[in-house]
Picture 1 (cartoon, rainbow, N blue to C red):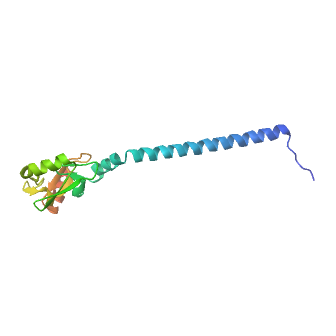
Picture 2 (picture 1 turned 90 degrees about the vertical axis):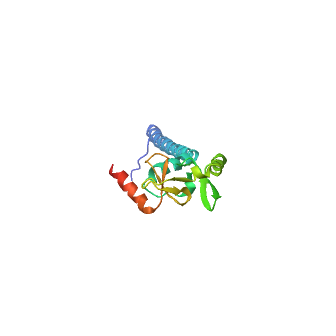
Amino acid sequence: MVSKKLTKKQLREKQALEDKKFTKTLIMRFGLLLLFLCLILVFVTYWCDTKYNYRKTLLYGKEIPGKLICMNGNSITYHKTIKVTLSGNIFYACSEKCINTIIDHYDITAFTADAFSGDTICKSSAIIGLKERGNPNVVYFENAQNFESYFKIVKRK
């Protein structure tokens, strides 16, 4: 039986090759871990912006809950809004300034025209939708039929 022994030189070359493979694998894994951590940090840091951009683009053509809208500015907000009850109607505002504006100018800010029919409606009972994809401005509708009709016409254009 012949046993094959490696010379010192062959043993060093084999060890050097294994060290290269290990180093390469270690660097790749560390790089992937670093990339993954950076992506998580960016996502956590810009969480509000991510949600805001999501809402501006993917909620187009869908009914938007009032709690995501500042009814004084008629736009989607970055953060949750403040709920205000006036004359039995629920309104949402992004700040104390907007709340005061709704209270002080109730006749002007609480009512708007239906985007499809043009009838005057109260914002608190309206169905809300985005005016344009990627744009935070919203439009109000008196009922679901007007809402659907508006978006059918807009999608054709």
